[in-house]
Each structure stands twice: as structure tokens, then as C-alpha cells.
Amino acid sequence: MPEIVLEHLEHGHAQELYEIIEDNREYLVGWIQCVESINSAEDIRLFIEAELFRYTQLKPPYFTIKCDEEICGLIAFRSLDKNNKIGTISYWLSKAFTGKGIASQAVKKLITIGFEEFSLNKIQISCASNNLKSRAIPERLGFTYEATLRQCEWLNSTYVDHAIYTMLATEYYSAQNPLYSSRVPATSRSRLDPASTDNDT
Image (cartoon, rainbow, N blue to C red):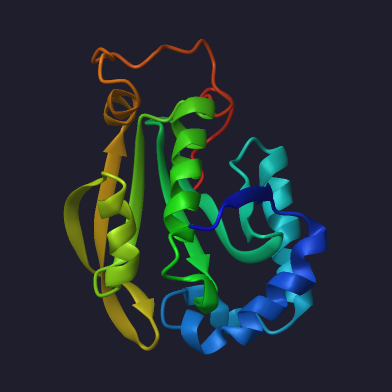
């Protein structure tokens, strides 16, 4: 299985990301709503600019997924409920890098960041219910299937259902240490303290 790293999204990634999206447009448009609105590297640059501004407002960062120094996708906590400490992970990979365990590695790394750095209590992954490869990732990583939300996204000219998977902090820490008690280690103040900023959805 190839080793991957998560690297903070930066302005310098714009051209490479645009080329990846162009090369994978037909594949990605079936699963990612915003692809149709991306028509130039400038569109990516503006997206990166917006995400970097969000980061200055104590919002969680976007990461590029890199394999052998090559960008192959993006991952982030795209939705965050700071009051209840719930983060929702979204991710995508270029087609050539699917089926190699890369997405699972990336999600696993972001789970660690979410629970250990951001002190989240719950992490959620929402997948199109017919995207079986994407659904296999949370299932493989020990998430619990909670529900299917019916026709919750307009995607590729049709409404699609979403399968919702979740993991709790207690489950994460218990998996790391079988002797772990039922109480998550308290932190005096996390980077995403609800007192510092409003919910970001």
C-alpha cells in the first residue's frame, strides 16, 4: 500500500489541482457537485483563497492528499458544528489513485487530527448511497452506519440519497487503547473552542 501525506492547501497548488480536475472531470462530476463550476485554474485559486481565509478564522484547513510527492486528491472537515463538536469529512481522489487504500489512509489521518487536535466528540462521513466504493471507507475504518437521508443532494441531474456514518471520540480512543475508560481526556480549550467562533456549515 503506498504511503501518503496530508499537506495544507496552498496557493501554489492551484494549477496542479485544476489539471487533475480537468483530467478527471467526467469521473468526478458524478460524485462532486462543485466540479461543473470549475472552469479554470483561477477558479481553483479563488477557492484556495477562500479556504485560507476560513483558516485564519479558526476554521479547519483543507489538505491535499499526496502520494509519492504527487497530489491525488483533497480532504477536509467540510462541515463543522463547533458547539456540539461534530465534524463532517469530505474527500475525493483522482481516478488513477482509487482502489489502492489511499482514501482510507487519508481519512484515518484526518480522524486523528479531528479527535486529538480539534477535540471533536463525533466525526461523520456522508456518502452517496450508491457510491459503494466511498461507503466502504467508513465501514472499513470502524464507523457506525446511522441512517440514509433521502434525496438530500442534487447531483449529476438527479437527487441522490446519502448514507451517514459516524464515529464517537470514545470509540476512537477505545480502539487506540483497549484499557481506555469511557471518558474522553478533557482539554481546557481546543483550537475549535465554541466560545471563539460560530458554527461553520
